[in-house]
Amino acid sequence: MQIVPLQALASQTVNVQLGGQSSQVTVSQKGSNLFTNIYVDNTLIIGGVIGRNRVRMVRDSYLGFVGDLIFLDTQGDTDPQYAGLGNRYLLVYLEEADLEAAAEAAEAA
Picture 1: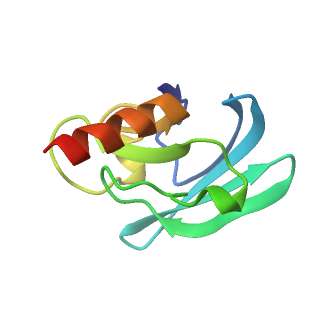
Picture 2: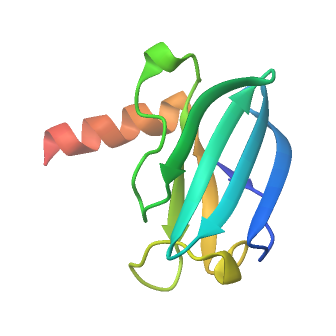
Picture 3: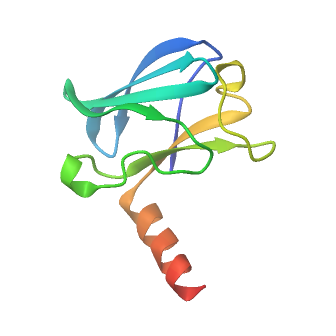
């Protein structure tokens, strides 16, 4: 698990290594929703995905992204808003091992 460093800005772009991938994450607030784009090596993997609390954004391995990203509300259970980015709302990269552990826990439940 890795925290992607975001600031409390309505629109921003972050370049970061995620699971060995040279990634670019853009986040922008439009109305009441926070939208995310993810690029790897300047190739769009997902675009315009609405950030939801604890909901995976990439989901499908055929898109060519190793791992996944989620927003986590550290103080409740609401969807992210830009004013709380980097503090209340964290953007978390989940490695393959994190995803496998979550799948095993879901099967055991």
